[in-house]
Amino acid sequence: MGAETQTIKNLFLIDDEEAMRVATRQWLELSGWVVVDFAAAGEAVAAVAPDFDGVIISDVKMSGMDGLALLDDVRRIDREIPVILITGHGDVPMAVDALKRGAYDFLEKPFAPERLIEVVDRALDKRRLVLQNRDLKRLLDQKSGLDARLIGRSSPMSAIKDEILNLAGTRASVLISGETGTGKEVVAKCLHDFGGWKEGPFVAVNCAAIPENMVESELFGHEAGAFTGAVGRRIGHLEHANGGTLFLDEIGSMPLEMQSKLLRALENREITRLGASMPVPVDFRLVSAANEDLNKAVSEGRFREDLFYRINTVELTVAPLRERREDIPLLFQAFASQAAETYDREFVQPDATATALLLAQDWPGNVRQLKNIAERYVLSSAEPADRMSRILNGHPGMREEGGDGTSLADQVRHFERHLIKDALKRYGGNVKAVMEELDIPRRTLNEKMVKYGIARLD
Ligand SMILES: Nc1ncnc2c1ncn2[C@@H]1O[C@H](COP(=O)(O)OP(=O)(O)OP(=O)(O)O)[C@@H](O)[C@H]1O
Ligand SMILES: [Mg+2]
Image 1 (cartoon, rainbow, N blue to C red):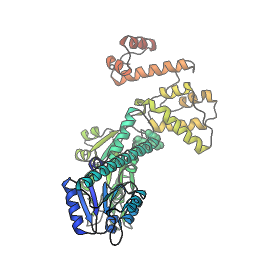
Image 2 (cartoon, rainbow, N blue to C red):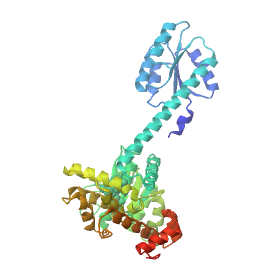
Image 3 (cartoon, protein in one colour):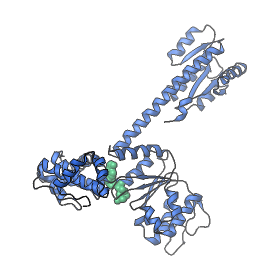
Image 4 (tube, rainbow, N blue to C red):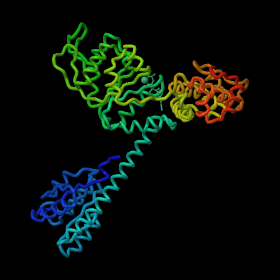
């Protein structure tokens, strides 16, 4: 939310009579407000923009454009900017007309300075509230826009969405880490689309997909004849990203030599095309993604430490799906309805058993895998009752169906066993940590471990 709307204090003052203008200006400035004055209404109108963080005070009777015409023009720019008009003594019909046309208030000449101050004070308060409400509404609109793009209400997802809105307006370099298929690219695109540079390009480069000998010319471009085969000039990705976002996907696979060149380009904000003598300035927001641990790559000497610090001013980690299972039903629902529409199929909601099955999987391929399953579910010709178990059983990395039946009780047992095993594994067999995470007493945990045949260090 714009902090500036907390204390707005800008005033535009319009009066073609200099003595009056100077005197009024002084009164206003004594109250600590920032006054810009104009001798002609047209100039003031030209300086007003929507969301103007202030109030306008204008004389009505002026040569050229008068105060009422100014009022109309200002209201066309932003209907809610308070305009205070100063009318001639006893000109009641004029004052009434002004109020009808949307003036905030009027002052009759001659007026006491205190009266002016009081009216302006109220008008500024009103304007501040209007701007605050607009900020709030924009934030809510953005939030719901983001909810549609990045589905999930789990706490890790909500935290990421808050971070995106928080970072979107900045140019901070963001490193997005997370396992394959968790949604890193979606996050990168949202950082761009919900940010201040969304009008600019979003240039995505998959560093792992470029042959090593091509990386430099792909990223930095080249001049004609820079090397054998360089027929024409080529503009590189860094230059293409100017004024927008450069998304370097799988940045961990960038060759070391190229890492130094990238670092230099980021630090100097300029690049030199291969075979060129002069650098060209570049200005973009850098978002990188890695599905490997870059810290490890640094310690193994595969990734430059200085580049690592340069690209991760902020690090966003997208949690694997198995650590935010509560997002699964919502994601499945979204993907399945999407697929149903694409393939013109009917989408039969999965029943409780099928949903329990979905929840019980480990999802090594994360959201991408879930999306794939949802599509297959929609396209499957199997009976709705055993559709889910069939699809999951045939899918790589998926668990075999639990129990010997598909009853809800069996599925629930299967899920419970899985949750406990998973937690034990994550905490390296630390029973106390598991008790806390699952919020169950030690005795219950022990009983369940015995029941499901789980060892502490399984
Ligand atoms: N929260 C989400 N809401 C909606 N769709 C999502 C979400 N997360 C991921 N997806 C979808 O899942 C698929 C995989 O996401 P994405 O390509 O962003 O993953 P990734 O982390 O970049 O994977 P990789 O490391 O393999 O490149 C895409 O089709 C994407 O649209
Ligand atoms: Mg990706």
